[in-house]
Length: 153
Image 1 (cartoon, rainbow, N blue to C red):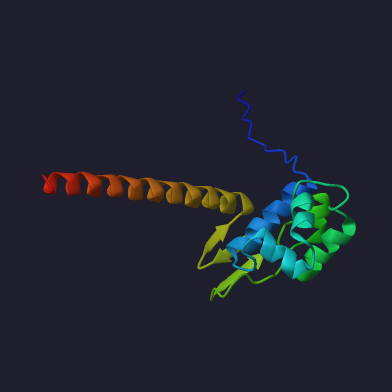
Image 2 (spheres, helix red, strand yellow):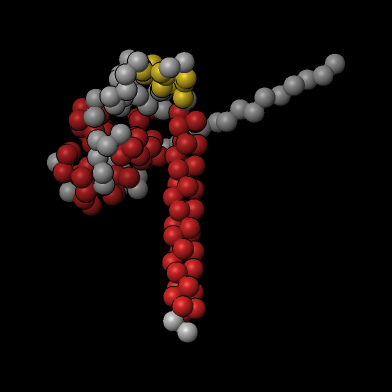
Protein backbone atom coordinates (compact mmCIF):
# COMPACT_ATOMS: atom_id res chain seq x y z
CA UNK A 1 0.00 0.00 0.00
CA UNK A 2 1.38 3.37 -1.01
CA UNK A 3 0.45 6.56 0.83
CA UNK A 4 0.72 9.83 -1.01
CA UNK A 5 1.11 13.07 0.93
CA UNK A 6 0.39 16.41 -0.62
CA UNK A 7 2.13 19.60 0.36
CA UNK A 8 -0.04 21.75 2.60
CA UNK A 9 1.03 25.31 3.23
CA UNK A 10 -0.22 26.72 6.51
CA UNK A 11 -0.65 30.44 6.43
CA UNK A 12 0.60 32.15 9.56
CA UNK A 13 0.17 35.63 8.19
CA UNK A 14 -0.44 38.51 10.54
CA UNK A 15 -2.89 41.33 10.00
CA UNK A 16 -0.05 43.60 8.93
CA UNK A 17 1.15 40.96 6.44
CA UNK A 18 -2.31 40.85 4.88
CA UNK A 19 -2.53 44.66 4.90
CA UNK A 20 0.82 44.85 3.07
CA UNK A 21 -0.37 42.25 0.56
CA UNK A 22 -3.54 44.28 -0.08
CA UNK A 23 -1.38 47.40 -0.52
CA UNK A 24 0.83 45.56 -3.04
CA UNK A 25 -2.28 44.48 -4.92
CA UNK A 26 -3.57 48.08 -5.00
CA UNK A 27 -0.18 49.27 -6.29
CA UNK A 28 -0.20 46.67 -9.06
CA UNK A 29 -3.70 47.77 -10.03
CA UNK A 30 -2.54 51.40 -10.19
CA UNK A 31 -4.97 52.45 -7.45
CA UNK A 32 -2.13 53.75 -5.24
CA UNK A 33 1.53 54.31 -5.96
CA UNK A 34 3.31 54.75 -2.62
CA UNK A 35 2.64 54.70 1.12
CA UNK A 36 2.49 58.49 0.90
CA UNK A 37 -0.19 58.23 -1.79
CA UNK A 38 -2.07 55.75 0.41
CA UNK A 39 -1.84 58.10 3.39
CA UNK A 40 -3.32 60.94 1.34
CA UNK A 41 -6.18 58.77 0.08
CA UNK A 42 -7.00 57.52 3.58
CA UNK A 43 -6.47 60.87 5.33
CA UNK A 44 -3.71 59.63 7.64
CA UNK A 45 -0.17 60.92 7.97
CA UNK A 46 2.70 58.90 6.49
CA UNK A 47 3.97 57.83 9.91
CA UNK A 48 0.61 56.29 10.82
CA UNK A 49 0.60 54.23 7.61
CA UNK A 50 4.18 53.09 8.18
CA UNK A 51 3.52 52.15 11.80
CA UNK A 52 0.31 50.32 10.87
CA UNK A 53 2.28 48.34 8.26
CA UNK A 54 4.78 47.46 10.99
CA UNK A 55 2.01 46.14 13.25
CA UNK A 56 1.81 48.97 15.79
CA UNK A 57 -1.27 48.21 17.91
CA UNK A 58 -1.72 51.96 18.41
CA UNK A 59 -2.09 52.53 14.66
CA UNK A 60 -3.28 49.21 13.23
CA UNK A 61 -6.75 49.45 14.77
CA UNK A 62 -10.14 48.14 13.71
CA UNK A 63 -11.03 51.72 12.80
CA UNK A 64 -7.95 51.98 10.54
CA UNK A 65 -8.75 48.67 8.82
CA UNK A 66 -12.40 49.63 8.43
CA UNK A 67 -11.41 52.94 6.79
CA UNK A 68 -8.96 51.11 4.51
CA UNK A 69 -11.63 48.65 3.36
CA UNK A 70 -14.26 51.37 2.90
CA UNK A 71 -11.89 53.37 0.71
CA UNK A 72 -10.81 50.29 -1.25
CA UNK A 73 -14.11 48.41 -1.39
CA UNK A 74 -12.69 45.49 -3.38
CA UNK A 75 -10.59 44.42 -0.36
CA UNK A 76 -12.31 42.10 2.13
CA UNK A 77 -12.21 43.34 5.72
CA UNK A 78 -12.71 39.75 6.98
CA UNK A 79 -9.64 38.68 5.03
CA UNK A 80 -7.47 41.44 6.52
CA UNK A 81 -8.67 41.08 10.11
CA UNK A 82 -9.11 37.31 10.35
CA UNK A 83 -7.55 35.79 7.25
CA UNK A 84 -10.94 34.36 6.27
CA UNK A 85 -11.98 34.07 2.66
CA UNK A 86 -10.29 35.82 -0.21
CA UNK A 87 -8.50 39.16 -0.33
CA UNK A 88 -10.71 40.36 -3.17
CA UNK A 89 -14.43 40.39 -2.50
CA UNK A 90 -16.51 38.06 -4.65
CA UNK A 91 -17.57 39.27 -8.08
CA UNK A 92 -15.33 42.32 -8.09
CA UNK A 93 -14.10 43.33 -11.51
CA UNK A 94 -10.41 44.15 -11.72
CA UNK A 95 -9.17 46.71 -14.17
CA UNK A 96 -10.55 47.11 -17.66
CA UNK A 97 -10.09 43.61 -19.01
CA UNK A 98 -12.74 42.60 -21.49
CA UNK A 99 -14.18 39.09 -21.15
CA UNK A 100 -12.61 38.66 -17.70
CA UNK A 101 -14.00 38.33 -14.20
CA UNK A 102 -12.86 37.89 -10.65
CA UNK A 103 -14.50 35.28 -8.50
CA UNK A 104 -13.09 35.31 -5.01
CA UNK A 105 -9.36 35.80 -5.36
CA UNK A 106 -9.17 33.88 -8.63
CA UNK A 107 -8.78 35.97 -11.76
CA UNK A 108 -10.18 34.38 -14.87
CA UNK A 109 -10.48 35.38 -18.48
CA UNK A 110 -10.17 33.70 -21.85
CA UNK A 111 -10.15 30.30 -20.13
CA UNK A 112 -7.27 31.15 -17.77
CA UNK A 113 -7.42 31.31 -13.96
CA UNK A 114 -4.86 32.91 -11.68
CA UNK A 115 -4.89 32.04 -7.98
CA UNK A 116 -3.43 34.34 -5.29
CA UNK A 117 -0.33 32.11 -4.98
CA UNK A 118 0.23 32.24 -8.74
CA UNK A 119 -0.24 36.01 -8.59
CA UNK A 120 2.49 36.26 -5.92
CA UNK A 121 4.80 34.11 -8.03
CA UNK A 122 4.19 36.41 -11.00
CA UNK A 123 5.20 39.39 -8.85
CA UNK A 124 8.41 37.61 -7.82
CA UNK A 125 9.18 36.79 -11.45
CA UNK A 126 8.58 40.40 -12.47
CA UNK A 127 11.00 41.63 -9.79
CA UNK A 128 13.56 39.11 -11.04
CA UNK A 129 13.15 40.39 -14.60
CA UNK A 130 13.63 43.96 -13.39
CA UNK A 131 16.88 42.96 -11.67
CA UNK A 132 18.08 41.24 -14.84
CA UNK A 133 17.30 44.35 -16.88
CA UNK A 134 19.34 46.48 -14.47
CA UNK A 135 22.30 44.10 -14.82
CA UNK A 136 21.94 44.12 -18.61
CA UNK A 137 22.01 47.92 -18.63
CA UNK A 138 25.12 47.90 -16.42
CA UNK A 139 26.83 45.47 -18.80
CA UNK A 140 25.92 47.59 -21.81
CA UNK A 141 27.30 50.71 -20.10
CA UNK A 142 30.54 48.90 -19.33
CA UNK A 143 30.84 47.63 -22.91
CA UNK A 144 30.27 51.15 -24.24
CA UNK A 145 33.06 52.45 -21.97
CA UNK A 146 35.41 49.73 -23.25
CA UNK A 147 34.51 50.48 -26.88
CA UNK A 148 35.02 54.18 -26.28
CA UNK A 149 38.47 53.57 -24.78
CA UNK A 150 39.46 51.29 -27.66
CA UNK A 151 38.33 53.74 -30.34
CA UNK A 152 40.08 56.69 -28.69
CA UNK A 153 43.51 55.01 -28.79
